[in-house]
Image (cartoon, rainbow, N blue to C red):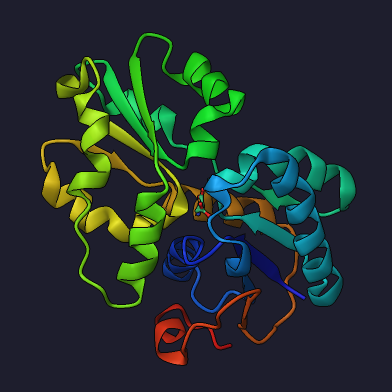
Amino acid sequence: MALLVFDSGIGGLGVVAALNQLTPGLPLSYLADNGFFPYGEKPDEILLPHILNVLGTAIAREQPDAVVIACNTASTIALPALRAAFALPFIGCVPPIKPAAAASRSRTIGVLATAATVRRPYLNGLIAQFAPDCRVLSLGTPALAELAEQKFRGAEVDVSTAVAPLFKQPGGAEIDAIALGCTHYTFLLPELQALRPQISWHDPALPVARQTLKIIAPLSLSPAPRRAHFTGETLPPALLAPFALSS
Ligand code: DGL
């Protein structure tokens, strides 16, 4: 078939939107494991076998040519195991520490992500590699992904309480660039920018889409219906239509 884009909920739809922007009509399907949302609050030893199982079923059904793990929480724990288990290209998604560090003049940057992503050694590796001279303040919170899910369904949301603890940390007032380490936050970008317009916010959706197109360039994807699959509640057609997906 085509490309399979995977997340625990609506977050990966930001990557789908970026793919649509760069290459409209790309044959792809979307899998939201929203029956197990939020990933960020689950222990690693439960999450890893669960992701392998859910994706294994989807891969057997869809026969994709490549898979985008459009979820930082899943990427930071499951990419090596997925690559070992399935002979397919996997494109992952990690907090955009590199562009945030490049944009920072104060050399104090922030990372907003799920609790699971923040506690993983993977994040320390990215910081050591791409921001060794920066003070990096991070906040792992379940609230923002949940707010993104609510906003996606039409609710008005207030992000100020959820992000306040990031700026209350020592040095927090000096943060001038923030890496969004959870794909759900793409949908909160307008609220986050409005809250702190002086900060340079870094969302990975477009870079992940670019990387995906680079990886799949040599593959010839066959035409396929653009479907979204859900392990929990199915989103109504009106919410999927802007992404050129149907359920
Ligand atoms: N979208 C997921 C990520 O990028 C996280 C949301 C969740 O906690 O399930 O990390």
